[in-house]
Length: 165
Image 1: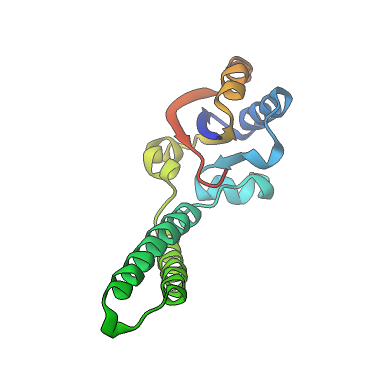
Image 2 (image 1 turned 90 degrees about the vertical axis):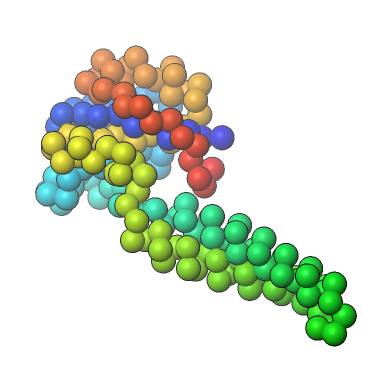
């Protein structure tokens, strides 16, 4: 399972050096992203490394799980009540409908909520610092951290599992 690790850098050249050190340590390109103030991102940050600023994907996953469980429970309750006449296929249909509805509504709400990293380190971002976000195995991050610090990064207290790993 991958873990999200956040490092703070004072400027874009340092962020690029930290990204290069992460790649050299074995962190795949698609698992490296940047978070910065909008004026810094728009002018200087490479497009493929910009971190989306919302909680869209984690919220969608939570919604699918919660909606599916609710639909399944509703279907099982309906099966237990004979006058309703729901079959096991109906239970599956309710579970799927619940998962779809829960995923869609949660994703829409999550799109309006800032990313957890942005929420936690809002002061760092507003101060003009660039955050380098790495998603990798804990062992890889532990081996890479000395090189990242030598490149100019400051590790921040953020160590959470990545949602879609």
